[in-house]
Length: 135
Image 1 (cartoon, rainbow, N blue to C red):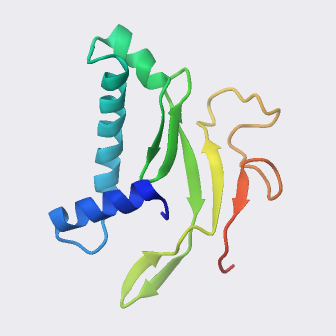
Image 2 (tube, rainbow, N blue to C red):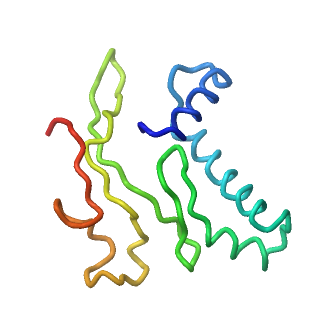
């Protein structure tokens, strides 16, 4: 991901892991930790469920994987990235994002957009952004 949060994360984590590029696992641990810490900051350190949970639901933060917010039900809302897998030097690597679908939501939740929430926006619709890349 080409965003400041990811660049900072990669620069900080790769020396600790001894790898040239981290897998998704470290980011998948970092982000929930960042969410809880941001929630605690919003509550002034109050970690009681009745205070911390609403603070977390109101968060809108940037993560290495892009923007993150939550539905009132507590389900994460984040962007989805379309990439291409290629074999390089005998290993699969993913391309830079070819496209992004903004604010992916759990398909089991109601939609306010008039179409099933599991259908992503079409090219040209709000929420769909094209990136350069191959087909």
